[in-house]
Image 1 (tube, rainbow, N blue to C red):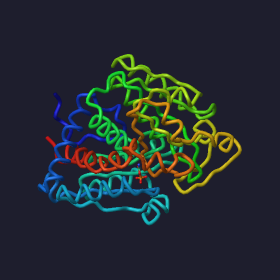
Image 2 (cartoon, helix red, strand yellow; image 1 turned 30 degrees about the horizontal axis):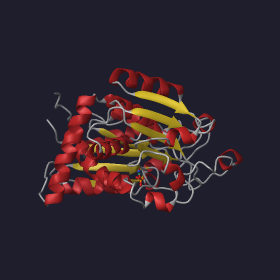
Image 3 (cartoon, rainbow, N blue to C red; image 1 turned 60 degrees about the vertical axis):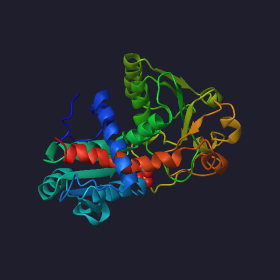
Length: 334
Ligand code: CP
């Protein structure tokens, strides 16, 4: 088993072997137990991290800030609108300077066609680990917390039906990074992954090709459907969540987390909402997940997200434990 994590970047879960992801989950569980028992975990004493945000966040920012404090270090929150980035300072200069000041740089930048490139430019110049707090393509911290939560509930994931389902939302245009991360990750654990969306909300071809390769290698499957009912039927886990239209919007829209977009194509698919009636067609113990924030009454009925099948808050809590594990291994590890 490889235990050498220190100094590595955390941009995409595909950069880590399954064995390495399992080690991250083991460490997450250990930190979760210690948190529950009130035990100190001073693995990053006197370490400093920088958290750069181009967009809004509740879970990601606070899991990292609280997590770093609980590990004995300090994480500084940097709103990029108040950094020299806003005057055009480059990713290169920002990464070089921040990495001379501290021990890790983490960044959220979801603008389509730009975010992942920006993160990789920082990787190129940073002398400390760079962590992806969500970009236009990947949300590795969310994927890891989702996986931890599923493994807590279902010890054997093989051949379990997990359905990633597009859902109608109005609150803002959401990146594809959550479904992309999930569709790549879950087949690696032998799950039967269903990806359901109305025509027009395809994920990039190279994502589907990689997800299929992951499924073949690890004994899972990937099925794509435009029939929502097929995805709910007998599912063990459903993840109904909105994502934006990659094909159209990558061509030039400058999309931030605050942008509210309602157009005719979106409105035509308003029926793609997670309801109790649809949940009733799934397995009797079906679990409902959502990365949050949820667009209540549009993506999902309150009675589902607040009901007995919902594990959304458990997954949100695991953002803390997984964030601490990744920081411990990459910043303070061997
Ligand atoms: N799931 C997630 O990333 O939440 P935030 O946008 O609040 O960080």
